[in-house]
Length: 233
Image (cartoon, rainbow, N blue to C red; front, side, top):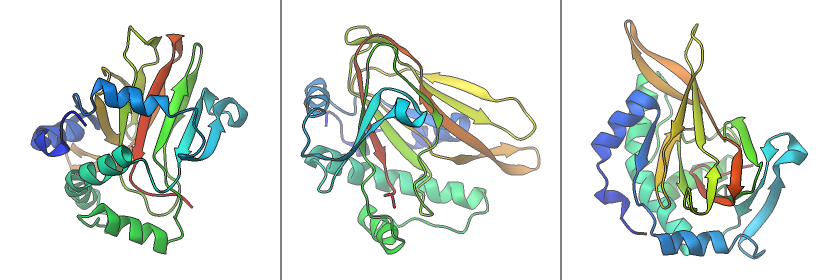
């Protein structure tokens, strides 16, 4: 990692998450770390499964879920970011009137996932080529859902690929959907809502539903690391 998660401005990140549903962590991974992670995509040992998106109507492109034990960098990143997000997640659940609270340590939360039958790791590598895209979706996987996730762009826009922007949409009650295109450079991470987030209204907080996807890659190849904090059934 280029920068440890603790060095980021977490109050500012929480403010951005409250206002927009997403926030950028600049330079979370170095260019060399990005290249190393992207370079393991074609190896079989680190992964438990491969998904061809067109086969399932998810879009075009491919992604691979890591197996346990996770690569050391992925495992360390997941464990280091989680405690900062757990505080935010607990405040969000309080605002949304949800009773679920999340422990400070990620391993404790994973133990709760395992007890609920969610034992398969969810961190993944995604690879897109020309014409590939990812439809709007949510990464849910079971009853135990952590409300925030992280994506790290491993490729360099303009050098490795063109197009392929991360797109987030927000559906507020009785309003049209709002879309945002997240600006990322190589090694930058974005934290965003998995499913719902609270929004302050005139009569208190209400819930809005978030989805995310990737626009079509016009040239080159785009790799992304996805960090989801709950495991899957």
